[in-house]
Length: 610
Ligand code: G6P
Image 1 (cartoon, rainbow, N blue to C red):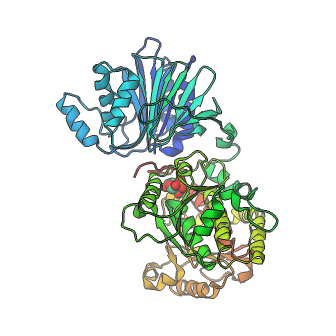
Image 2 (image 1 turned 120 degrees about the horizontal axis):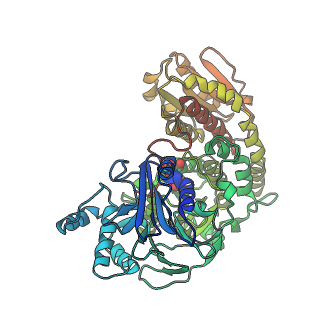
Image 3 (image 1 turned 180 degrees about the vertical axis):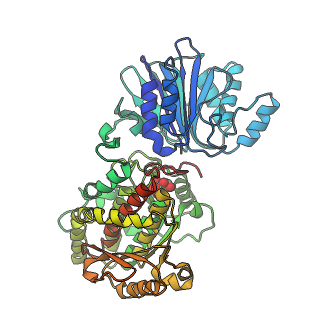
């Protein structure tokens, strides 16, 4: 988590740093800060608690702060509460400043050693030890680059840093281990950032640093070194992202914008991957056919919303005879496994930088799982680089912390993988053609589901004074209920739980009363009658139900039962369609609650700490 930006230019870089921070706010937003080398070759630093807007206000009160070299940071607190003294940049003395994204695991021992040498700590963070360590190397005669090189050898953990020194005013040194960092190349100016979106207004040309890389930006010279300090040529890549793609446009929130972008995102994810009747297997990579031929089972690993996409896919894989396990990455990485033979490891991630998912993949490789495949939305991300096969979701940048279009495009990508592996099991050519035809219908069906928004907006009113909600689903729609509950709790702070509807009688029924709305999705599938029975169990106990039902289920309004009809869809794509009204419901409930929809409290979009 946390976002970092840095720049060395021939103009005042403060507006560039601030603009970059605004784009990185999704990575954390509890405090922010900036440090520049000013015209007198001194470091000017301003920090503030809260979102970037607070930092902007603080800078408005200090119009003299300007500089051509600088670093900036938006924080998601790990060590130490969100106070000004814990905000980055951190300094050692008055001439050295550093920003960091990540965690220094051995900070306690370094802190003790530094205290013994007389360092006085200004913050509770794990970061301050890094800048003190660099300070000591400089005091012993090293320049900034060599001081950084020596320092990172003594650090344990995953991090990305940017460092400036008033004694080398046109220099910015960056390094990454575990956490992402890119170098943006402009005309006579160079930038550093956690991701490309932060710099799109100043450049589209980037070096994507490899894990372990160090970058020395010295005036207009850029040198990239690997973890051994050896200079390396990294390929300059041109981003296809536009600055507009990370702007809000006419929408009130990114979440709403992203909900509405889903039909396009899905169409883009399908484009070039399917023909009239079949799947193009090469979409997964040159070795896909060989890897798929060798695959006997699938292990999915993911976190958060991406994990829910994996849970849906388990039903899909096993329906076609492909054994599939799904596990939360933080659990997978830290337990002992009985490793199955010929098992394809599939990671799902919007960002491609979630540290638990990356560590779980590394663990899977270490203990002997087979090939790996990632379904990911960030092209140059660590997961993409670490995986044998890749299927990109072409959702475009997702900024709202609550994931929407990344989830539905992951489900689409998973359908393609299910078809690829299903071909080796129970899937006939005719069946494949039918599934492909259903996928083609998706964008139009998604747009139809979005038209339910006015009805959902009215229903959201019922949640204004509620503190708890229960979501129910069966089969592939149990994970959709989980996702609906996650969305609601993330952005409206209403406690929400999801249960497989058949499990109601084993506990949750005890909670039912008129104060706890129960939300259910009712596709027209073979589980419908059982679901209807569960719905009656709730009504019989005075519970108030809101059911999103396939129009063909012919469910009708009754006392304590609100039915919202969803256009009929085939069961293979129903989980994708039924997700849409649940996203809209959580969005409109959050609006009523007055929360910060795109930046809910305590959360961040890209979780690069364990
Ligand atoms: C965070 C985000 C979620 C996301 C999860 C996994 O918790 O707030 O929206 O689902 O991380 O992220 P990933 O980028 O790996 O999909």
